[in-house]
Length: 611
Image 1: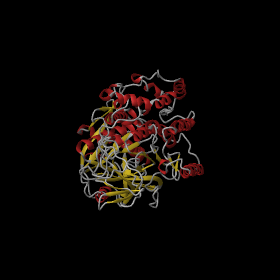
Image 2: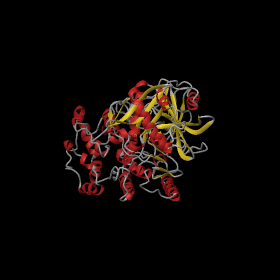
Image 3: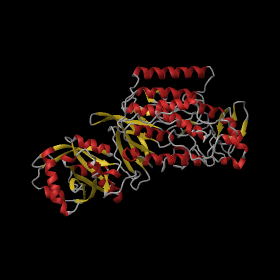
Image 4: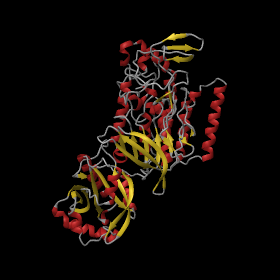
């Protein structure tokens, strides 16, 4: 099989490149200034580097990068918007022989320039003429972001509208080294051109990314910490922010109830893992996802990136979500605003401490506790800072040195706004206008994965992600807007009735209380399967959703007793890696699991439970 390679251009290539450019001009009218000075167009001026694509022994494409010319309007616009960001180069002279298009050659050429950008630390900018819609679609797929529009001037007084773009930072993405890259070695898999931003790279964010990639969507993930892992990454971000997970914490559920359906735990992992083991599992999962063909083709993970604002609006006449983010650890404190077709929020559950409205207490500075700290009080009426006392509801007064507030967390999505600057939901114990704890009723292109608490988090996140991905790929239709709102109204009313009768806590609207998750997961499973025989852009059924079978029932029913037996072993407890070692008689996947495996044409997650 003849392959296409990309190499640096030599002087001997120029005549052939001009011949190819002539065919491009005849077909597309590029370059717009004509072919009178074609060789100078390719070789003179500010050009720093150039590459050619070679198929067999024939040159079929070309791209170059040039030093910025401040007289170019798109360079001037970049300088205006980013006065402190001086390290840029201009991508241009990109063309492919019309007789050789459709084989990924343009993508390979772009990747050559992008890799040079990574290696030199120079940001690439460019412009695309408004008439070249095919080229603009290509740039979007390759993570180029528009930062403005400007007129392109050419000839004698002629101009044409152009879109100014810059290339996203790919420092965390695995990219094949150029030159001398064969198409057979580069993953460039199909996508449907839709960008779905995922905010957060914890368990829910990774689950969302996996299912979105499976549907052929382009997925950038923003993660504020240096590595994926969510709350299990205990790295402190600042003096008043910490993870609720402390060093030495052990899970209170067996790992069989907190595993992804497609990646098993290492066999020697403790049945009730330490927090560090959960973190390693999530890092391994993220790495496998990034290194997969779909991950290398359509995934971008941007760590050390803090999302400041998510706001709905328009760009180039289309509805989109604008995300403003910063990278405070970068040399220049980079800020960016990008546009996306849809957004998946997978953060917010454990960032904002819930502080009860008690006299004498203000917003605390959250500090990390050790595993040995166990303090609790109830019935507090008033705090008196001046004399360091706490008054209880029965009138008792107690002198204290410090107060530990163990009241959990509020949901904080104050960074998300609709058009007009309206908050979608204030900080509080629940999130307003969300259908089935998943879809924003007023605009379902905004979704939440991982809202439910007290649940089998990994399984619930996968179930939610399967539905979201199918909706965004248009394989699954949305309920009507009145239906979305009706479900939310009825659900909140039922919860309020329970609260008034004393049967529920106001903070537990999104809580599954360790029982409702089974019903929820299997309902969402049925929902996601309504795609029938609709195939993804990859010509398959997409990632199979999880289901809750009898194996998971048995694992949960025995988890409390298993935990007791586990703790009795003292320092040797982490040598226990399965249920059988603690006396469980469970002997493998149930018949329900095997039946669902056949139905879904995928894997039964129960296969991993008792190994």
